Image 1 (spheres, rainbow, N blue to C red):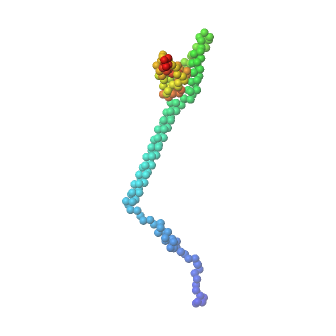
Image 2: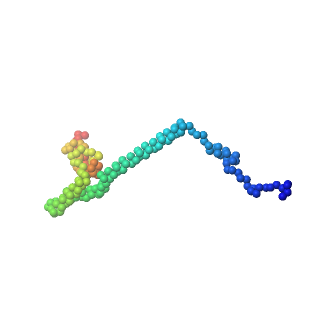
Image 3: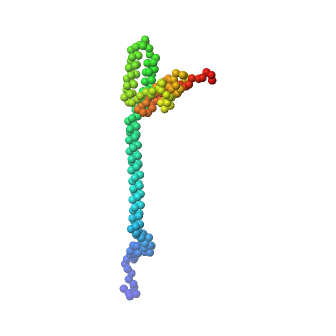
Length: 193
């Protein structure tokens, strides 16, 4: 080797430690956050606790409302779930009543008695399910239970009284299944007018 020759390092890569550059030092400084005081930390935790408590109360109220609604729907289904079946049976009952109204004992007494027994059995079965007829003839007209089909001037009944029933109405427990179709009395017309 000559004196003027210089020895170059065999490894030409510079080994720079990470984070020693100016950009890396600036990034590390930006990540450092000044610590909050204890009062600020406490206030933040109290705010978070209030928000969590409010959220808990809202969820609890929603759960309670869901439970009440579910119980109400269940009770409704138990009490009135067979309403549509009964509404289908009522026209059969109406036809039996019409048959009894037009039947004559002279023709076929056994047939009339059979219709009467079937009618009675059907009414008894409906009563077991709390189906009751709406009171109509002689009762004051009530639009919640009666459907007026005609007005009849008469002195026999006070005004606004049901004088004739065309079709029976029925209640299921306390709920109207079908209103009674009726005619309602009015005051007799004054001949002088």
